[in-house]
Amino acid sequence: MLRFCALLACLLISIGCGNPIEDRLVGTWIFDMEAAQTMPSFQALPPEQQEETRRNFASTAIELNFTPDRRASLDVTATGQRIRTGAGAPYRAVAKAGQRFAIEVERPTGKPDSYDAEFEGETLYVWFGKRKRPFRRKEP
Image (cartoon, rainbow, N blue to C red; front, top):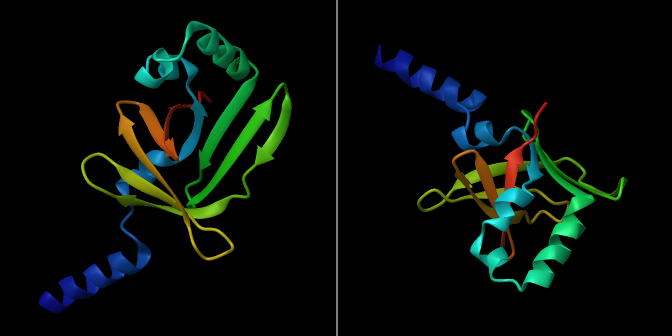
């Protein structure tokens, strides 16, 4: 029986048991301007800068795409034109302290780009440098 359990454990490890963070990431996430407006960093902006930010994002769509086969891409569309499309690079999610995790995206250089992230309810927050950005799941 002990051999069977050891064999089963090795089999599960080799095929992958799934990563709950990666499983939750799968899908398309869009920048959530409504959530961004409630953040202290946005509220600290002068009113004219808040309005300018709203106008800029009214014609801009930012999508993070995570596929079941663990590929990530970033699509940015401004005024109807796609201005950047991610290539669908392999990624993994690595747990950190508390609710935080890192999204590590492989790059051709061999060194991954790493972005801190966390879920708060149904919102995915991703840090691009020091800037925390909210995303919500895109409706089908």
